[in-house]
Image 1 (cartoon, rainbow, N blue to C red):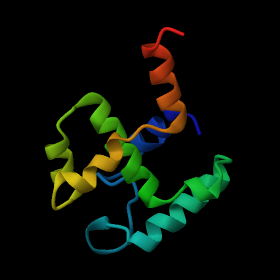
Image 2 (cartoon, one colour):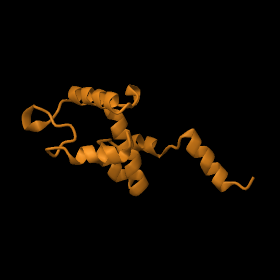
Image 3 (cartoon, rainbow, N blue to C red):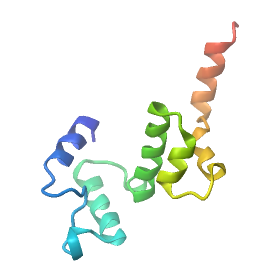
Length: 107
């Protein structure tokens, strides 16, 4: 699913929740979120194995650190007891490491 399509879908939500539910205050259970993500995966032809709640949490953390370098604030937002847990989001993928090396070293 393209990011622009997802943003449009989010804007069309009728309440303040991305995943509105029928429960108290319109909040969906974690199980309901997982099920809705599976439906979105099928609808938008996204591999089911990447569509789970934790992937959204992970993406939020990575995007946050790209825009705002305050790891202590991110640790608070993520509910971590300290920044050591949050530091996992600072790690680069193997491909990102290769690009950083190639950009830094004159071969």
